[in-house]
Image 1 (cartoon, rainbow, N blue to C red):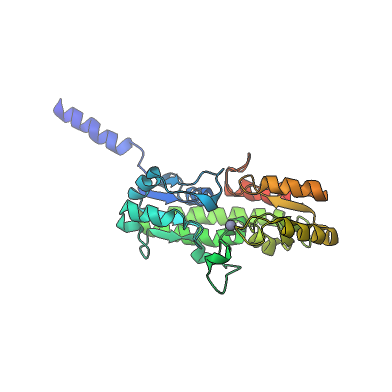
Image 2 (image 1 turned 30 degrees about the vertical axis):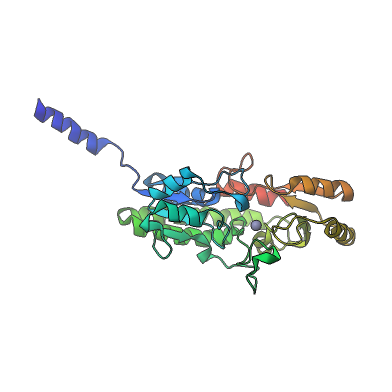
Length: 293
Ligand SMILES: [Zn+2]
């Protein structure tokens, strides 16, 4: 009987689906979504920030520290976007695998061609992004390079499944190249826009549209009445197509400017899952890019 029981236990161990071996913590939804594309059921992914939250103003919570304590890898946007909470989470987690310089500390921005780097890093000037614009997830080509680096990392962390991660990267890259043909056929080149915050510059570079002004005088600084008056004058001259904004950041101010100028507001998702029908990176990009037509 005991022998039989042992056999059942053994059989159970063999037939039970393999548990995911790599525990990944991602700060932002798009990073978690990309990790899932590449790792599928071979990894566990915990995302710290909700899609509805403004990523600039996140605070560390005990649940985040707990997640980091159990993680093999932490993946983050970088360029100091997470400076308000990530250093505290890493320190409090006391997880040596995640410390800076270790392979478990994965800064996605290392693969990005960073734009808007400031020559002097001085936060007293009010610019929240002195290391450069951190909102590169709007740019498919930059995320593709991050995906390549992420697949290599997963392959290194879980060598038994290295081929699986590389195959998923290839499928992701093939799908993206196919989608890019459609996106680049849309007539975005030469279009002019206003934005509340500097979120869409990587996308503008990639698709050839431009911004004639921003509601924020500097990233992170709320607009003054004088700045808005200047912007209205510029809008009269340049006639932008729309004011671009996200659900989490600046929408009321954008609507007020729209009433004064007659220029429409276009609301774009700030991250994967932040608006209906944007549940993965492809549908997120679809929504953003087709909204700009
Ligand atoms: Zn920002």
